[in-house]
Image (cartoon, each protein chain N blue to C red):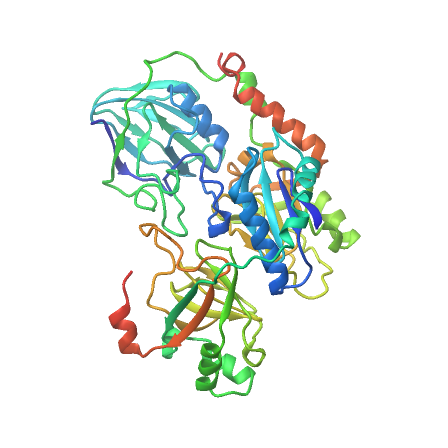
Length: 313
Length: 224
């Protein structure tokens, strides 16, 4: 059987797919790729279904070998990949010869890169998904980040090598942003006019303490005007909650499913994958838009992601 | 029913404004109705004390359409169910390092630690919902005399199995996660196991009691 051997894992490399939505009643957040768009495109490039399990690397990539060779695609952040010393192109399929080594390094631009392999990474599904939930040690490869020496089984490839690549204009449309678009959060009215103004005007810095559970932001403290504690309620992916000290936290893919902090805003659907590409120490801003606009942007983006004619150059 | 958009793909529906059993019954009823016949656009349901957060596919429906569909359930959620509650007993060792905040909780209320343990074990708790982390059940209500606000600064890592109090709620941490609740003991039993048919020991609506055990019993029972 084909396999992928982890010679060095990089900073934080996990098996991810599009997550396991629908288990809120058990308190389980969906997890899944931090940048699901990059994961989907990588899979399409190697002839997989878009939600096939792949590797997610964070800030610093690893070294991998493929004893029987493989067809791969690298998407997301540029980790300066090379195959046996030759530069590996991103956003297009790459053939790896048996025994060749794929080496990735520190990021040159964004936070997360995806390594999709024709046939996919095979791990037992947990609640219908291969995605790793690090906090609870569930799903993925033994519920944890990959380590040196791990050997992952690969599925059988569905198609032969194709020369397709993702078109430049699509990459431009889907590129990461530092101005994240948001809709109003359920408790926005509990913040003072000053706090709201500051939130939509000021710059916030992504903290080093950010991870797959949430992005912690530094910046002006935002005061909420809550009469006592709020009753704990469900919190969506991309919710921007304000802690008692006034700092925003953007809840992310391995988020807690419920929370009791007031939420001032929520990142819109088409910008959720962009959250996965924000590095620590990057400065971001928020732009307020309506639910109607957010929804039409989503429908437009999904149409693009389902249109091979537009996606591939 | 009161509605509020939570995100461009999520709608909060509130079935009451206070934490009480009547509101809980309505939340549980609406959850069961939606689970029984899930609409094709439904992606997730997150129940909580007084609300459900409904996540939907925005390519299929918008907030107004989800709201009008949920309104059709309004009469039915008020009908009282008569299902038999399921009882769960959880053994807890309240000894030493297992309950690092036990002495503080006792001191805040001017009680002896043994009295806090007695009171914590005296009540039958209702599982309002599971949230926060897999298998984490919000249990209530804690006797007024030991209800204690959460810590000012949350712990970065709470040991797995920790039994804790926050306000009028009590809970068991199924995983080692960050947490701001006050830790008064620890259970040797697994709250969540992915290799079990019913993964979570506690389900929404269950009745929970805690039983005090010795350190020796804890060690014999501990299987993870």
